[in-house]
Amino acid sequence: MRVCRYQDDSGVQVGFYADDTVVSLAAAAERYQQSSGETLSFSNTQDLLALLPAGGADHQAAQQLSSWLTDQSDAETADIRQATDSIQLLVPLPRPNKLFLLAGNYAKHIE
Image (tube, rainbow, N blue to C red; front, top):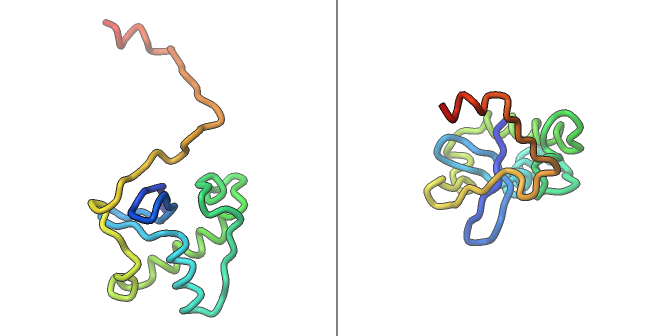
């Protein structure tokens, strides 16, 4: 599962990233509900950390949605896919909690 933040004409979105397309999390969840009749709930669809393992509250739902999306043919999801050249990919975390700078190999870089 590869997730990303991106901006399109409607604003900033969180979605599933493939090599040449993205699918918004909201659009994928809506299509999943239409297809299976099951609703996946996400606490915050704008927070990538919530979708990731190791404590992400929505990781299991995101993984289930990603697996379902992978199993669908491109033709079945063509209307919710956007080409990566029509969107702008954004940094994954707009304000990281911590930033580590390590200078362990700094001497090698300045040689």
